[in-house]
Image (tube, rainbow, N blue to C red; front, side, top):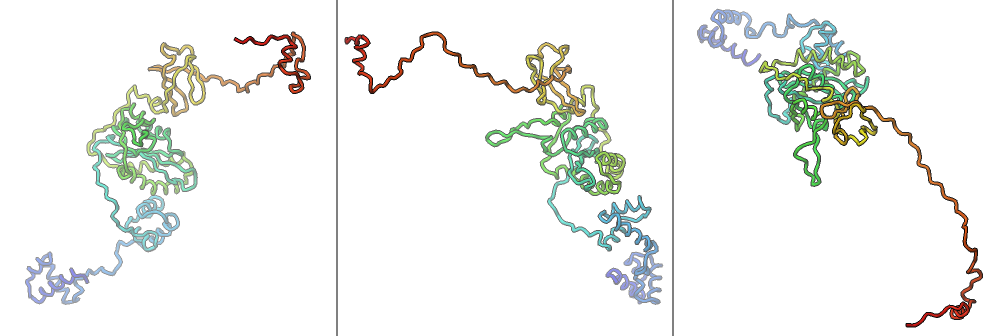
Length: 431
């Protein structure tokens, strides 16, 4: 018997012994006088048990049948042993037609040691930030590296964009987290929704690079990456987060995806990147749209439409700059290209042209506002340089053949003064 029931029993005894009036007892119990008279009458027949609910200790009339519980737990142990109660309850209802609340299933799983109560702990506190008011005002952009296929296929990267005001998500799977794959997702977002005001991402090298000076300090103005250049040409701002908690909305989306999406891909038997993207479009993203998204505080759409000047194929490409030679050729990726004769314009020789390596694999060269037609120059055959032949020694011709120093011996020869007298040479005159 609880303390509340003991207090009620004390008032009922006082009313039965007429120590307090029924009116006063009704006010203290919060019931009507008629009910006080019934409680007093029951107390005289059954004693102190009158304050205890008569269904206490008895099974509820709405209790789920034990056979249903055994069937549900057998399915959970066999197929959903690592699922949470909420997700397991959804699969039981959708796949097996067993309707049970998540709290009831949580109790069953705890009794079967399939779910353990999590301890509540205070972690590092981050100040709450209010959502942006308009759809398209701020879009968070990030990539999650996880074993999405659980070893059934290649290791994939989950690239996602989530709107800050509505939590609407656009995402895709890719085998590599490269600039090109992120540009493909950006292209799909722009075609579906338009140009948002700002993108919010981490400071990965795809979005942010800064050169270091000789003294160790970083330059105040960072160098633009290919994605940064594309966003600037589209008129979209970029904000760099300095911690994962700063972009908590997309981090929480990754937590949800690493739980629900991984198990959904497993149940669907997906083992390829094409199948994963198909499941994403048909199943997971519609579920996120219907269950996790919310209406914006301001119904105005902040997205801006694409204009005629926004050539996505040219903007969302890898852009480099080359100098045209005197023969109207340029070198791109160790290959020489020739500009067609009919495309030559004044000022092209020695000028700088824009080279666009597009997502479809094609190559485009632009000079000022005109695209030039180029063709690949045939490579020259590599030949080893010929070694110069050694010239044969020519025999000496002309002149008199003699051997003036034959049998010459310095020790046995005459002194120099005798040789001079014999030769008739005159001695040098003294000055």
